[in-house]
Structure formats: C-alpha cells, structure tokens
Image (cartoon, rainbow, N blue to C red; front, side, top):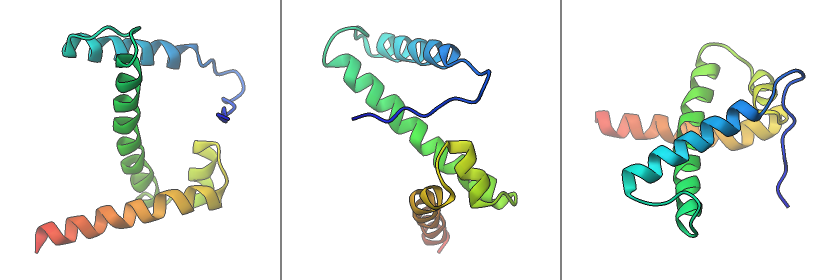
Length: 104
C-alpha cells in the first residue's frame, strides 16, 4: 500500500502533479517514447524518481551542514526525526566517504 504524505495546510499538490507531468513529457520526448504507453510510463517515472532521490540526499546534507536538526529535516520531509536520520545519515556518510576516496 502506498503511503501518501499530507501536504502543508493551504498548499495544493496540483502544481507538483503538473510539474511531474511536464517532466515526464519532456523526458519521453527526448527518448522518443510516449508517456501513456506501458512500460514507458513506468520507466519514465522511475528515472525521474531516482534523479529526485539523488537530489534529495544532497539537499538534506546541505540542510544538516547549515545547522538544521534532524527534527527539522524530518518535518520538511513529513516523517519523524528518527526516520529522516535512519534513511539519510548513511547516504550522506557514503557521499562523504566517496569524496574522500576520490581525493586520495
């Protein structure tokens, strides 16, 4: 079962839906695929999700580096402090390790 996060009061999800639809259409066009055709639509959405997930890790890392607490990050993500920390702390550490390895 998919869990839907509640948006902030007074904030519509229509703009997010429209932006996602536009991104899917642009990606499909660049690949010469149709958005509404299976399995292209699944692949398009998966690739956009994967890209967004990568960006999210970087933005969470930046928030922590700028002094935000894990509780703040959890609130931004609509999850608990513990859930945010458990998911993103290892990913941030992996990025740091990769950076160190590349520099040596």
